[in-house]
Length: 358
Image (cartoon, rainbow, N blue to C red; front, top):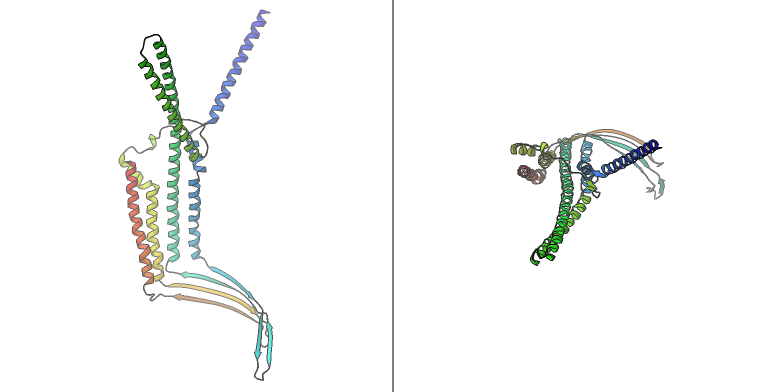
């Protein structure tokens, strides 16, 4: 009986340890499941941030400028149909009146193809493409700003959580000191001044704890606003020193060639320069060809025919000779001014990017 009893106790202890191990493992898995890392928070911010989504919608609208510009290379086809009721009343030389009710109708199709328009279409396509590239850099800059806000919010929550814990520990220590000081005062070992000082330090510690809790609440609200969800258990992120340039010269070079604001400003300059060529196209000749086919029917019994079929192909060349200087002024006024303004903006953005790295 003793051996069986000991064996049963051994099995019972082993079962208890197994249950405890499973319980501890389940708690660890739950904690790991609820924990959130910085990359996960950045993914949430990148997918759900309203400012970034609004800028994506703006960029999709900008992308549509390219197919609109490419439409200038393609023919324009127009179909037309007209029908109606017409009452005719003719007065003849013998003072008799002849009347008729007509029901004419006409159907036709017209195809127009521009052969040359002073390179307006080609330059318009280039302008649209530069606008798309500039918009993409602007979107990338907004994305960087959103991710920076997300990182800042994430680290602020971690920092304020650590500060709250430190302040709570400080308050606990100050409470112990206050209690010890009161006991020593009762024993006559310290003066009332020492007790008052201990109470003042505790009050200051409670005020610091309250300020830390307020800062933590603010940082959590900011986190929810930027990330889109309330923070759970956050995990400290790894350093990014390995990704940063090692020297100031390398940082300046990277900012000049990779910063989205600088690249976007460069594309804005290209837009302004190409827009001038679009405006200059009005000074060049244009050529187009037009083909049309139509059929018209009518019920006038006085005519020898009741229907007419027509088909034609026409070529047209327009050469501007003099328009009073309107086209030249339109080329100089907005386009050259915009080019100068955007060049200045490009230089300013380049300097800003270099200074930000310093």
